[in-house]
Image (cartoon, rainbow, N blue to C red; front, side):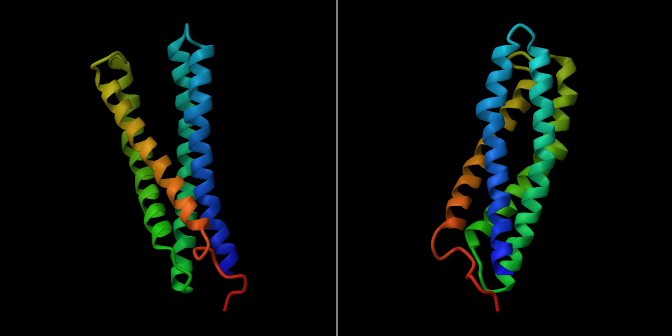
Length: 154
């Protein structure tokens, strides 16, 4: 059972890190490059991709956090993973339920420099970037020797 819980915790972190990195490093730059003459369409594609990712992030971090807490109860804790997953879950809730809707609401008023949209977009990028670094550190910690669950559970 410990192995399954440890795998769930690692998979949650990997999904968050991999999905977030794919959007930030591949999807967004490629979409804005290909649709450079239609920034609204590019923004719609990237925004929709982020919206889907936000649901994946919520589900995976919730599952990972529950698995991490279960490992703690089963005496196979990783404080780093517990704290990271709790932070990622809180960040995912903040981004999905507060920040993303505020960005959507601000878009009709304009998206140029100095607008509310741009201020919120910059905050989204900061939170998202921090979360990716946190997921990377937690994934490293969770897969380091001594932080993986033992082969046989008691």
